[in-house]
Length: 314
Image 1: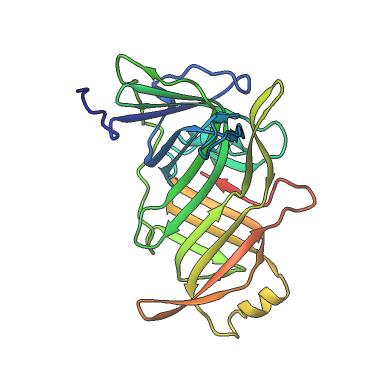
Image 2: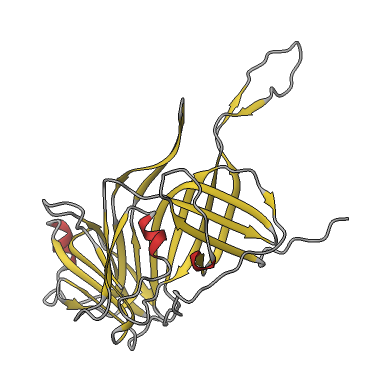
C-alpha cells in the first residue's frame, strides 16, 4: 500500500513567460501565498467515437483537447515598504492587467494595475502537491475581489493553461513569501467605500474582472486566450433616504458615477480600487441583522481612451 499524499503539503509558484506557452523557470521568489485551492489536473473536450454494434452499449470516447485549470485565493493586501511590487503582481498581469511601478524615493511610491487589451502576458504555473508536480504553460485567467465586513478580503483567481504530464519530484520546492502582506480585516478602521461621493455603510463588496477566457486547440495552435472583458461588481450597504441618493432613479437613467474602495492603513498595506464610470444597475433589497440593506450592481464603462474602466493602486 502506498503512503498517503497530503493535500496541504502544497506549493504554487508562478512566473511571467518570456515566450507565451513556453515554460519559464521558477525560483523561491515566485512562490504564491494561497488558500482555497482547487486543482483540475486534466480537463478537455471528449468526442464520442459513435461506433454502432449489433447490441446496446457505450462507444469509446477520445480526448480531443487537453488542458489544466487551477483556482485559488490570495490575500487582498498591500505592500511594505511602499513602492515594492506585491507578490500577486504576476497573477494580475496574467489576467490582462498592466503593472506600472513607481518605486521609492518617488514622492508617491506605488504600483498601479489597469486593464489591457493587447499583448496580454501569460504565466508558467507550477503546483506541487506532496512531491507531485503539475505544470501549466501559457496560463491566462480571471480575477475577482471579495471584500466582506468582518472577514478577510481576498483576491480569487482562476487560470487555464496547457496540459503537461504530472511528475514525481524528490522534494518540495523552496518558497519565499516575503512579497506578501497579511490582509487586514474589513471594518470601519481599515476600509472605506464611496459611490457617487456618498460614503456608504457597506456590508459586502464584490468585483469581477469579467475576462472571457477560452482554450483554443487548433491545427498548429494550443493556447489560452482572453477574448473580451466585461468588468462588473456589486455592493451591499445600508439603504438611504431618497433625498440623500435615489438609487432607483440612478438605475432608471443608467447613471455612470465614480466608485472608490480603499482597504488598509497609512501608506503601506493599502489597496485602492477606483472605477471612474460605474454604471448603476437594478438594485435589490435585503436585511442584515435587522437593518434594511440595498445591493447596487454596477458595470465598469471605459472612456473613449479605453483600458481605463478601473485601476488598482497598491
